[in-house]
Length: 460
Ligand code: MN
Ligand code: MN
Image 1 (cartoon, rainbow, N blue to C red):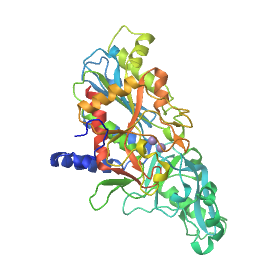
Image 2 (cartoon, protein in one colour; image 1 turned 180 degrees about the vertical axis):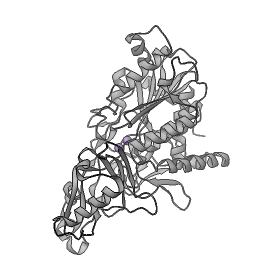
Image 3 (cartoon, rainbow, N blue to C red; image 1 turned 60 degrees about the vertical axis):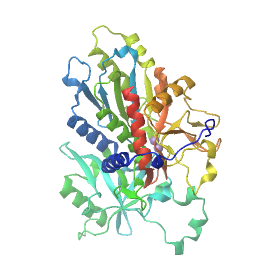
Image 4 (cartoon, rainbow, N blue to C red; image 1 turned 90 degrees about the vertical axis):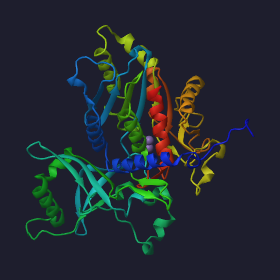
């Protein structure tokens, strides 16, 4: 037997029938969770699931004790869940951070116009998208808009079977000779990502824009809003279809927003399933990762730091800023984000010895960034060894890889902002295919195994 060489095993060859059954159940509830298509909807659902599992708003508790379960919501787009450990919190916490925003099309502040007797909405894309992938698919509309009484209207149109959907049209091949000669990156311009929303004219001589007006009339009747209300609205367009099982053997989940709702769901289930941990466990769900972790709901905001202050103040009367800094520098963190899985059609972008593969488990990235590790936190060997020892002790199948060949591209995660707290952090997530597309693919084996990886950190 060859005991010297490192050989990987596909998870399907390891799991027992019982474990496969558990995996399928887990992935079917995950598939349902993907019905949350915006950061706001994720926060709402996470809070609902948290409350159902005994978590309470931290503001309702004066003193925290071991195994208390609390949550904190930040501006409806960012949420933290915590289970208090039995050990002194000064020894550090175990933290898992994932992001709940995904690439999409946002409505511009002044979106509605008409052309050729059709009404359209102008958009401004959010995050890194390949624009051609967003034409000719059904889109649903989600978000918030205030009416004249300053009441918030929650928009959610297009995901139910009976709802209308929206769409960005594209040129027919017969007339696309010039378009098809363009570079892929230029073939669809951002200013052409205009969404078709109407085609009936109002019968009124005094109105100039007759289709636009008829749409405004519908919106006014339905929601009590006028055109000016769009100026302060926040509305996102996302793929209208539901997540599905993919393949004859149903090995995969396909759906929109799996970057990073797959790691979000794994992290959520891990904290829900924690009882009486030794270390205090925190799952943090952040917004704005796709545009650089900026904004008051992104990882760069001091929300997380102030939550830790809040938690320590409810555990111990005697604390100061040094106590908080001590806790943070003694802590371990998994930056829970997806990575690229080697695609059989595009193997040319990978270093095959150092890439992640579908079905081979939780994918660790020691560093991210690009061009000579620029912009990476690059976890140290001590922490990497400690964490993989935890995984090994808990029979977690894991792999380690890089995002593509050196110098071919790159990307970043929230990891580097966590290291500002002098905390040990490393990226561990699910490898996926077609990342940032309207229909991303993840393997059930990796989804389930990454959950086992996260909960093993919490149990440590
Ligand atoms: Mn991500
Ligand atoms: Mn992303």
